[in-house]
Amino acid sequence: MSNDTFIREVNEEIRQERAKALWTRFGPVAIALAVLVVLGTAAWVAYEHFANQRANASGDRFSQALTLANTNKPDEALAAFKALEEDGYGNYPVLARLRSATVLAQKADFAGAVAAFDAVAADTAVPQVLQDAARLRAALLLVDHGSYADVASRAEALSTDDNPFRHSAREALGLSAWKENRAADALKLFDQIKDDQQAPNGARQRATMMGDLIRSSGSAS
Image (cartoon, rainbow, N blue to C red; front, side, top):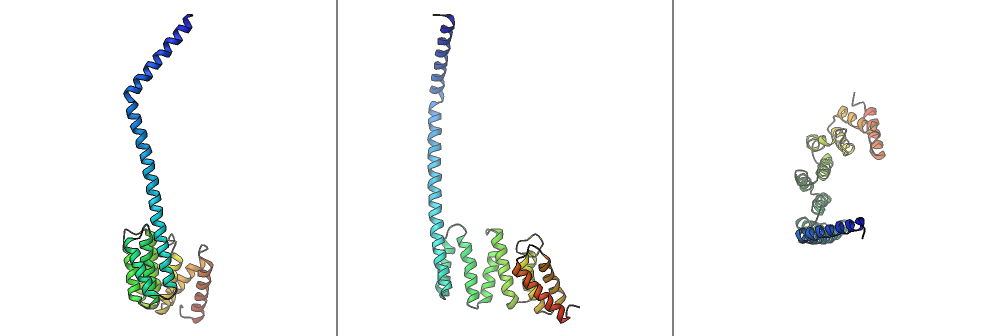
């Protein structure tokens, strides 16, 4: 046997002995970690499956409640939305609250609808975008059923240049100002919508029409 062969065999035996020693020392820990990884993965998959099932069930219930609302069964719809508010999953309880407020408005309970929207807007547990949507919905109702101050207290915060709801908020403010004979204020708001290239075409067309109407009346001079 050559020296090189002997040295290789010795090195191989040393590596094997080291591997055995490492396995004896750390093998049980490695097995435990592997088991924990497997169990953790299984638990996460089970949780996702459970969450998806709950979300799908809440979505089905929400659709059913919408069908009741759209088929002129407001009281049944309100009951269905109320149940979803109490035990729905994900964002469906908040969506149910918003939709309940809409049903109240359809029933001509405008004070109740505004109060319901205000409650969502004031709920810090609700995502910001849904809080803002609730503020806007309340403001739009108050154009016809409240004062300019009522509208402004909800819509002014949404009318800034960086707010995605600014076009609708400015439209609500402009219409409310026009109703209270604040023509100059209304014209300024409608011009802001008209000049905003990011505003939807429908909003810009309505703003242009209202601006032309105010100018032709001479009430803004």
